Image 1 (cartoon, rainbow over the protein chains, first blue to last red):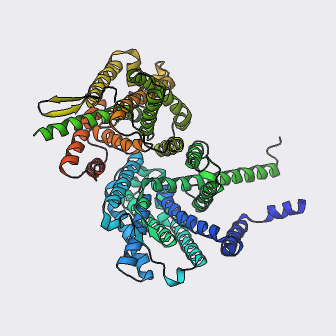
Image 2 (image 1 turned 90 degrees about the vertical axis):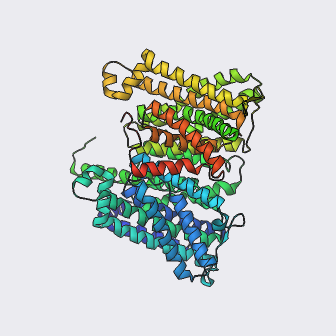
Image 3 (image 1 turned 180 degrees about the vertical axis):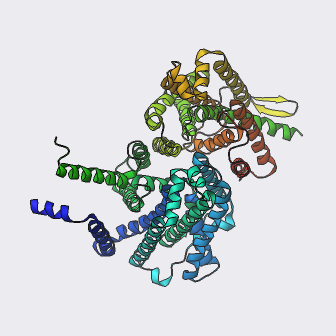
Length: 335
Length: 285
């Protein structure tokens, strides 16, 4: 036992991190073989929501602007994919990027007026946009397909459930890699400087409005991708996909998981989505109807006591433990 | 022409409802600096409470009004104490997110217990006719009730010691604490007043519309629109903005489209904020 502890202490945390990533990735790859078909479907949907949470992470976690239009934008991405693939009849590989670009463009249109406002005003304005988009989809039958909804075609190579799983997994990894590079680049630092102190960032010569807009548009591109993934997995769309509650859910996934980390949105979206479905499935009377009540409570408790979320909190705990260990070694803290 | 005046009355009545909710919100948002997004859901709770007290409990409507206002005032104080006070001094967006959590809690709770929309009978079910205008008596109650409450609130803020203390906290929280005002108690009081106002609006409006779990979510957005347009913390702005929005909406429903009736307010807000990001009037900021 002591040997293992010694080995662990010698083990640089860099390799530890890489080890965890490899382990999670391996688990994700073998998942379709070791679990039921139903779970594969739930995981596929959860990963689509994780892409959405990651996209919100860029604008909220790193740039500090709480967008509540992401539910609507996800719906726009889903509908754009459905319309281009089914009604226009475009090739799958053409329809997918076009759907993302359309979402990014709508995001640009929404961002131009709303990003001039700050803090809770921005949240309110984007929420207003979300309600408008939902009302438009609800009332404009031609766009949303009315009660029958919009059919989304599944290309031949995505007919199988496991194929869709790997495809969404691939998109999730792509999103993660892009986010990683954005966050580690100078651009990411620029975003974070806006989050920390917008006036100071402006004073150092950063064009805060343009950078916020860039962050928002990139974020919209990826939430469009998330919407397309949901559309492909479900095969059918109706106007409720644009409802503002979806914005709340993305926000909850992100915040409970941990904003401003790359693993937080993953943990939050996949863990909570699975938990939500589990509560629905076990069929104990009372739990299904009241599951969002627990989520609301968790959100309040997390925001009060753990504002950095689950992953942020764990990180903090880890740093604290490490510093304790170090200090004990030097002998500064004899207790 | 009588159609126009009918719509005008409906607009004023809608505006009365908006003013009562927006006044509470502007008190909380402007004075305590809390973006209390769950205010509309407390309004919804007020309407359900009326159903419990009046329809299930069989108590007279006007006594039920007092009971609901008192109960919701206590509810507002509890919310302030449990959710918002621990978040004081943190970024605005955190209180906003906590409010979203509160919304989920309240809406799921009500929906889980009673998923169907309910209707509350009118206390006096008559229709007045005057110069070509047909008006249900309840609409008149809403309009008069709003005026009475607005006047009472103004008198309370301007003429009493406690009201002046609220103003003092709004102007300078630390300064108010220095001269011996208990800031925590003033926060609780502000929440109690604001939530009681929302309860009054809910009780007056309930007989005119269905009571449903999602009735608060669009209303609170409109109240925010009014507060932003009227200037943060400005009671005069909230009153003018509320009546204006009600009338605009009633006219838009009549002459443009009723399917998009909830969109107009938000479109107005977006246009205004795009031109002036800090709102139309400068409030107490």
